[in-house]
Amino acid sequence: MKLRDLAGVDSDSEVTGFAIDHRKVAKGSVFGAFKGAVFNGEDFIGEAVERGAVAVVAREEASVPRIPHLTDENPDGCSLSSRRASTAPIRKRSSR
Image 1 (cartoon, helix red, strand yellow):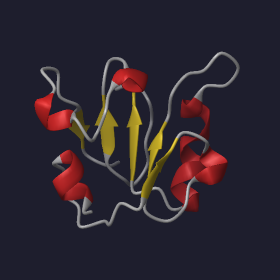
Image 2 (image 1 turned 120 degrees about the vertical axis):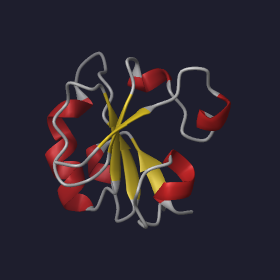
Image 3 (image 1 turned 135 degrees about the vertical axis):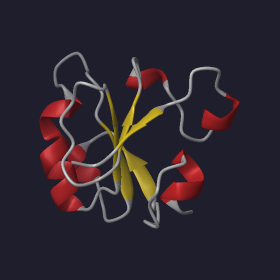
């Protein structure tokens, strides 16, 4: 599925999966940069981009280089697959 169709961003990237562990990101993954009890996924955004992520879901304050940044106040509570039905849609930020 194209990122444009999944998240409404201006991108022809093909989405192949979703990962919340930067070590499991593969070419075409959307990386969920969530804050956990031990690690903050935002600390691994750069590594996820280098591994082939095509977009990152993270808080607006996070720094996301070169790829679409899908923002949400509570990113670990959002769902790309149900985004169209959501009353609080993910906001898009242009890549930096």
